Length: 613
Image 1: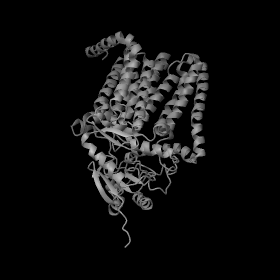
Image 2: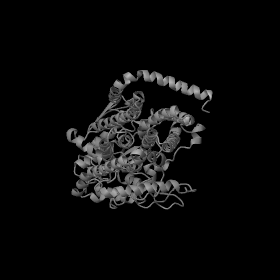
Image 3: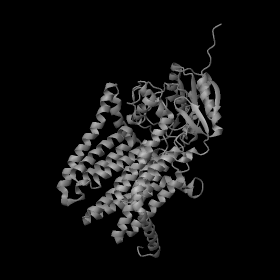
């Protein structure tokens, strides 16, 4: 295979292309990073005030940060879903701007730019190829993941940078290596404080590198063991030091038990999700029960995994996942026969091939390097395995939980640097090992195809956070709390109607509740919500949801109730009126329908009490 004309022509083209790039390296070595910064500035600057949607996490991020500012106790008075550092930076921004949705969007775009710079630095430092680093950074800027969720790509990229720098690349001296190992502990601690689930998987990569580092060079085993011991001790110490102020803060504000308990709860949540994926699926169809809840024949309900975080007295309490009702992954054969979007379906499954190949190639190279005693190739292998492993920390959330463009785009952000490092190592291996030329070619081709598939699938979708979300948004919509966004002209009357319906039928301080997930309306109207958990759907709520929701509605008497009947999980049964039928019917009976907006958003207002004669 390695002597075939086609293979020679392919690598002849690659060498020719690389030669042209090398001739431009002298310029790119100096100007690549400034070019990336300028590109990010103009790219995000062209749509910094576009992308307002009813769905997504814009409203919940701002509303939860507002609550923290107002004295609500995180995890005790309200369910966060993420950890404290997802929201606390927003409260710090609001000290200067006040609650401000536009400032929040700019912050998340800045976070995306930082992630792209980290990805650029990683590839530049590991490969020395400025053109490849620039290409990686540009891809990360162009498709940063859904705005208001950009912490996810940031976590995976940050972990890749610090772990590669600490345990793969030579820092020049033992103390510098220890410094970076300590920095890795501090950075991973920050990752945990932002989002726990992917950080648990990143910690597995970290622990693996701790054991591998001393044996990378057996000649200096004792020295590397001492370095690893001291550096890892510093890493654990800084991990604890970063967490300590938050534990003290939680203790002083009365939510220490909830703060520490969530770590164990999320471990159980991940195990339950894994259990659901590996156990036999039901043969019976999913049917609504008499109470409007879903029943899967033959499947026992999951055991509660986060009940200690959520008080049972709240109507928004969540615990055991009794039903799914989520859209599954699209069938690959359907895409091949034109029944589903080809590129999107391929983009769901292609990372299995590309990440699997990178892992296999890196593992094979590591074994070969250990057999031959090649420290350089050991580092090459660990470069692939570390960057791919950190990117895979975001794989389960899109592949198992929500196979959509939002979660896929988040996974791709740290995966772009991994693909770049894989291409670099494959080219180096091709030049050094003749018997690995075939696998090296395959790695380069698959990595290139992965980028092509991802770009064609994601760039045109709003879920990727790309500039495409600004297309057609030329009308300006203004509301309270920094809601100053461009929207499509045909949607402007709908946005204004929603805003006016809430403001005209409620007074400041009166409750407005939205289901299943439209907290942005609380923000743009500056009206509070009593909901403990802002998100509700058929896959996460208990069977007594309607009963508890009616109880809370009767008790709090909100001025306005907003129902968005979209198929939140891309299934018909996931529409609120279907899975929460008793509660929906109660609202229709006891509240007055003021209007319907965007074809499916119903605004119900509290009826005027009849005066006694």
